[in-house]
Length: 329
Ligand code: NDP
Image (tube, rainbow, N blue to C red; front, side):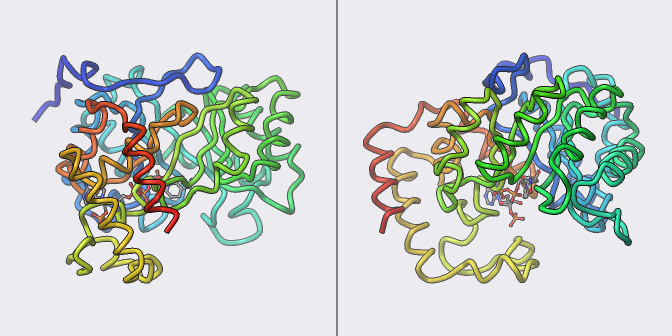
């Protein structure tokens, strides 16, 4: 059936300015790392994406390697664009990245000009796009000169293949170098995409200060710690089909100790009449330097629950100190 976006789609979402740029991003963005690959049900992913767009989530985050198999999330998203969202292209912020292994041989990963430019060309083909809104260097490359990686990003902007560029998972020190190198090439660094959640607070140790000083935004990935900071695992069982049930690397993070922490945090959420995932999102939004919270979702029901964060009042000082005390234990 033909899709018509809801007329009221911009009424619920709030938008934050991305650093010192002209771009506003939704407080909640949707990532397609998992649940949107060739192994996943297309219709479920499509429903989630359209529910997002109907709720004002106009930013969708991809990467060359998202799937599985690698590339298949971009193919699925390209199909969603073609089937439904292309008439709304000017309302969308679509990002992709390159940095991890995508094809065999010496040019299939990291940060060379050879890899980044070829990878973006392939991403554009898979999605059926002329340009993406944001293109990221997905990870710092210790062996490629930063001038080469940032030079490729700047050229990509000049070629019109990306409107803005960003970096992901760069340390505070590497970010300073990358941002100033880009600036010297006449291209601002729009945004950094680091991991950040109540269970992973590394960006508080310098990176956020660097981004604020440099005028770059921050979009936080895995804000729900891949599902730990939701109702998914609170009773210690691993539901069929959950990420922990299918991902052997993630499963060991569910320990008796973490369950104690999660349940204590859940009590704080319950006391304000909400859920743990909403608490986790509100906690990130407490800092205005965090432009957007980049969640994943395996169903539109999960997404809808998480989106209720936007209409809630901010966490109080008392709630924040309760959270702090739990995380310090
Ligand atoms: P989250 O921490 O938000 O975890 C998402 C998962 O949590 C969902 O797939 C689902 O897991 C579970 N979940 C979400 N909401 C609920 C809910 N309300 N109730 C119960 N379970 C819920 O983020 P991701 O780890 O998925 O990462 C988000 C995005 O960040 C990615 O898609 C990608 O765009 C980006 N990213 C970037 C990286 C980088 O290197 N730059 C690395 C990793 C991610 P389940 O499947 O069990 O239902």
